[in-house]
Length: 185
Image 1 (cartoon, one colour):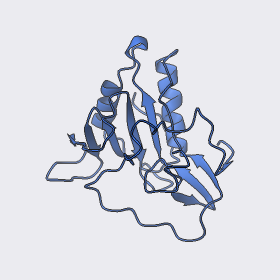
Image 2 (image 1 turned 60 degrees about the vertical axis):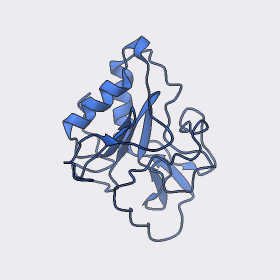
Image 3 (image 1 turned 135 degrees about the vertical axis):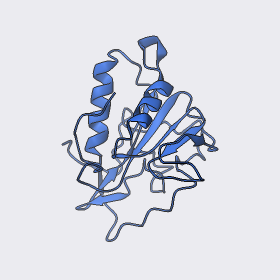
């Protein structure tokens, strides 16, 4: 497990690139609001272990891929906030980031839309939602669509230069954000 970082320690290679679309908070507008965490606000943060596992597997499958738009934690203009890029899940006083962006890089065979669609079709129980190419898929049925069905995404960022994946807020079990079983990539 990576060591937790202070809230103001946001390395460029971990910060989600939100400058181009400052008003897009990467939420599923149809999903029920997530309950607020109890207790004092965390002073440190870390990335969910399941996302670190996914990133390592993607890096292994697509060596040399661009990471220009990769990111986990939101910048200080967006966090604190409601995005899963903000360390909202409180794990023993450490905030956990439950979202990650992966760069579209077809020159190195990483087609972000194809990877997002493949992940969607696996119905991995850790997935909360995926955003790619103006579409969003949630683990639960929403808007009259079954779980994991693509629906239109109307946020400002079309997610055509990267895909976004959020994992569910529970810590353990098959759907846990810290569950590190292999992803099907």
